[in-house]
Image 1 (cartoon, rainbow, N blue to C red):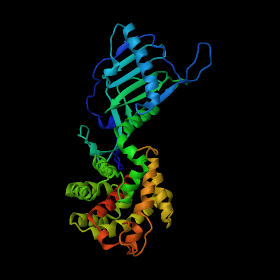
Image 2: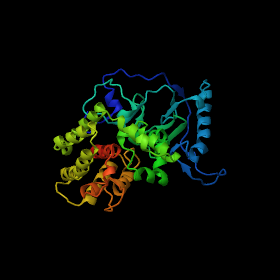
Image 3: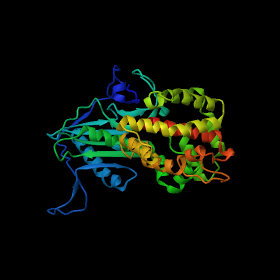
Image 4: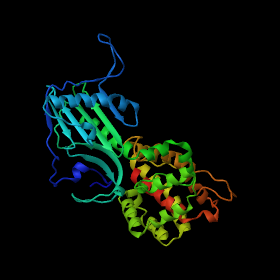
Length: 396
């Protein structure tokens, strides 16, 4: 595995004997090329969709899925099979240029292309847990032959939601990479639908940011969702913050630290950052906050120099640089939430301060200028500082 801990599942399974779970149903005369986009009478000119990506959260999905499934089931009956596709979890239809087709119903092996949190190299066969996954970038069927002249239909379930991809290949050059990416996007949006909804709901997102929380990648195994639930219920976060701090024991902190050491611009600060982690273990929030929040700017500056070959002392430029890097990891619509992170940096981590305020944001500026009230140096605020640095480790 490379230093940024990104590797596809198909690569991770190298050396493991992976097989499809069954055989396809072979069909003939499957002449599906497009989907009518609007009502039309015979002989009229009408608009059609030749490519559709939709989830069951969208009206479009429900407008077209019934007719698509009915057409495929008709083809299976013509071939002597009786299949109820509405009972399936994953349907893949590959239509060849001569209109023959393979229908895979819960039978095709599936891989997901993911970004891993774990540092270093992992052996094939390593068991992964949800907390090991930082982001999902793609979904595909690696043991199914799909050619440039083929058409594809995929319908799959994730929890109580469904995703649909149809590509009628109107240009005659089907892109497997595009299909893999779009299926991965569908999977991610459906699996983390509650998180996406909370990020889009400004009152909830604003309350979380105001309390210093963000969907840090290290919290993506349900821990951040608990904070969302408490905010939406109108409950105080104190007890949940204390509980979250207790989940960061020595082993978890050491894994985070090892991840940082994979980055040259963090490795150069090894002794400083190790001190911060050790102070967290010793429950010394003042030392953690003072150390980490004042080091972040230097970390970003070093990363900026590595990319651009020049130095900058402008903090807004460095923050924009970090957000741009996060966007470059896979676009704006990923679990990195680069746009939302920009808001978090502006409104919390690097927010301005009011000297003499009885309480205030534990921002880099307030801490650096000695303007943060003493009672704000708490373990939850110390954890937020570590998680902010950890987020930059993923981005840079």
